[in-house]
Length: 582
Image 1 (cartoon, rainbow, N blue to C red):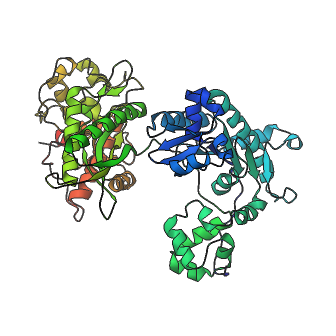
Image 2: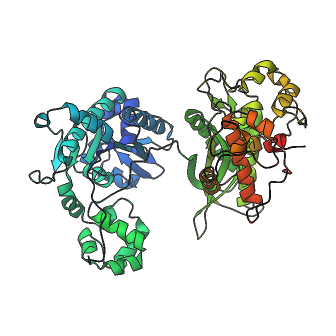
Image 3: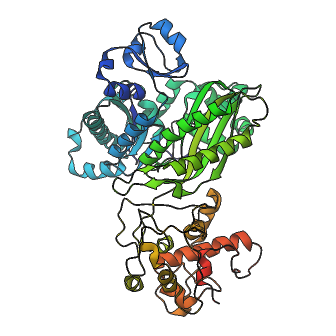
């Protein structure tokens, strides 16, 4: 590599553990049916063997091969259908939850892998141990005679002890075996953990990083190097780590980009500066079903109905309310690729059980969703012409938590089993907070197609919050079920924004100073929106002020981006209308 590249500094202060569950799908099946533990077992999805237990591997069976090839190698291979991922997902999240007992910094990689940053625990423990008494747990990769002077070897030794405790706990509580890699960065932790398998762990010290990378030889083994990048590198005659080290950086960055080229070279030397990012819940929950050619609409509908029923179970387990549904298909033609269509859906379609908080569909909601699904399908496929479908997929995206926050503006208007109703107008006047007694498990969320159940005419002279509550005190009545006209999407204030604009809005919250002239003790980043009734605005809880201020800024960015005009009263029935001066 030419000298025109400065590698990133190799900082050793972190301790990262990579946990990889052994033949995960197979282990789950062996837990469900212990009689499978002593036989060669494979997990089948369609015509492929996606994984197998280690007894099968000893017989020569390899994962990600065809069923026919696996059977030819091991005729007594027991096959289990693993297309329904429900149990796998459930146990996967149990593992992640267990890891979060050790550190909040847990990053999921698929269903069977997790990074855990245990730096904080290590730094605490190292103060209370005798360094000479520390014994490393498991294997060590590379030389152990040369160490740097930063103390990383002691930290990684303690990290190996924590990794062993974690693996023992997973085995005891969840009956799963796992492998672990312990290193000062994510890259080395992931790679070194695969050196000794199954049910073992390996630690690598920084001085052995280059040795490990050269042992893996192929550039394609570097996490993050996909098929396209590998092909690009191959055109430059770069197939191995050594080839990469010997190439000219100018050639590399011209074939890729300067940023990607530098990243790749750093990784090839075992240098990874990426942090362990705590994983939230998945951005989408979906199922796909590849099948023999389907040509009849009735069969399509039946397949979608089956997918929807399975999907609702996953959504109930997840706990959030989806606001978008997406349909995916694959046609049998010369260019076989996936196509998809999506649209917003009302969260009111999902029924939340009062006692269990489970989510389900009633018959009316199910029929409505099926109608939406088939409408999306008809936009993808001209059913009046011959068609051949080889894959159907259904997924929910753009989730929102079930509402639980105090003083959120939506709480003044929501009627839902998961939300505390207004119990008295006097109490509401005193606290301006109708969600004080909200159960912590209730996190009902709303989107663009959800509606409230009455049209509202705000009083221009009185406090608009009080007036609104007085006019709609019947929200306490369980039989209340009149038609809806007010869009709750506008109450939620953020459901129709794209991911990008949400991010920009969040950043934009901080770009103004406080309006000190009113003499109110408020957050320094909140101002009263122009044309709003200041007296009403400053009487609101701080959280509500923040939401209204953010809504005004979003509207300004969307409608008045090129000007500095004050926001006009919205044409739609948004929440801001109730605070605009007459």
